[in-house]
Image 1: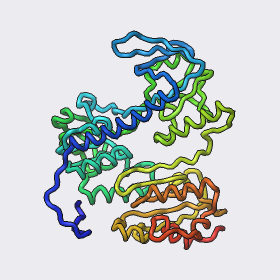
Image 2: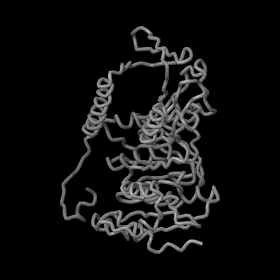
Image 3: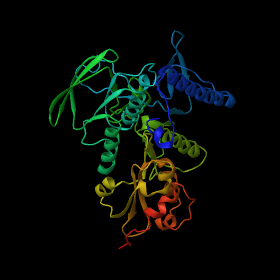
Image 4: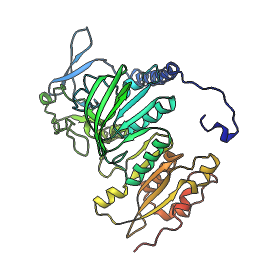
Amino acid sequence: MLRAAEFGLHTGAISTDMEAVRERKRRMVAELITVHVGRYDAAGVELIMGTARFVGPRTVAVHRGDGPVRTVVGDRVFLNVGTRATIPDIPGLGDAAPMTHVEALELERVPEHLIVLGGGYVGLELAQAMRRFGAAVTIVERGPQLAGREDPDVGAAILELCRDEGIEVLLDAHVRHVDGRSGRGVRVRAECPTGDRIIVGSDLLAAAGRTPNTRGMGAERAGVDLDARGYVKVNERLETTATDVWAMGDCAGSPQFTHVAFDDFRIVRDNLNGGNRTTRNRLVPFCMFTDPELARVGLNESEAKARHVAYRVARMPMAAVLRTRTISEPRGFMKMLIDEGSDRILGFTVFGAEASELLATVQTAMLGELSYTALRDALFTHPTAAEGLTLLLANVVNKQ
């Protein structure tokens, strides 16, 4: 509603009812749980709710609260234990009881001043949401840019977005100590390029990466090896070091997205039914659901350079896409990497309105091994975001 007048709308005072926000989230989660539990029932699968750990090869002991421990032996075992938010080893941070994304989504109030440790996907999505709910927000990122795995121009565009929305961002900031308790008041001391800073806030959110939920799993008793970071070691078929034990999703070191965990399942399922699928050369798309969205599939420029892959790049501001004018959302840009010696699409990055839909179009072309010219010469509906691809690719330099 901040831009309501731009669209000819006149509004009165607006406030946020965080209890209603939380209840909507809870309803969505409850509905999905009902769907998934129903699938267990329909398939005749026994679902045991509890905490399990290996006590032997393909044997787990399940602790069910105050009930008796149950031992289950299987012919096959599938691990999908996920990850949890990492709490960095910073003096005072553990005692401050910082929120993770779980607690942040359960808030029944708008934080007065939220301090976010980490400028990755979780930190950025929640920082923007809380800012729009009315909180003051400070992001503390230890790296030189936000969204550190993306190209510098992407990081700069997201930084500009944050600052335009009134989010304070500290880059190259190393947190040295935390005092207080999240929800009651915290003080974060950070070493910054300009000197030490003391950030005073009401709430603290830890969004500094993920830790696999494998500690205490008893993996060694089942012959399941873990790597140095605690992830389950798997091959390209997602087989562990133990016979008839597979691992899927985050805990197997797969890219940490729900759609990747689902694809891991499909690989294991199909192979058990006689297929021969692997994770090798898998084309993984992803999207950060800020407003506007950031989406990417394939290589970005930083990765291409690191791998010594020669490429051509097509880049265009989103303001040149007529769709963004119809919805008054011109922020951002898109760019495509094209192989230097052929017309193969190497990767696509877009930061802007309807980015996830543009991403699906380019990903489909890449899966079909189409050249960029197929998109350049396609007839897309006007005015859609996909129509912008023809403009983006109209002036690509000829291959060498």
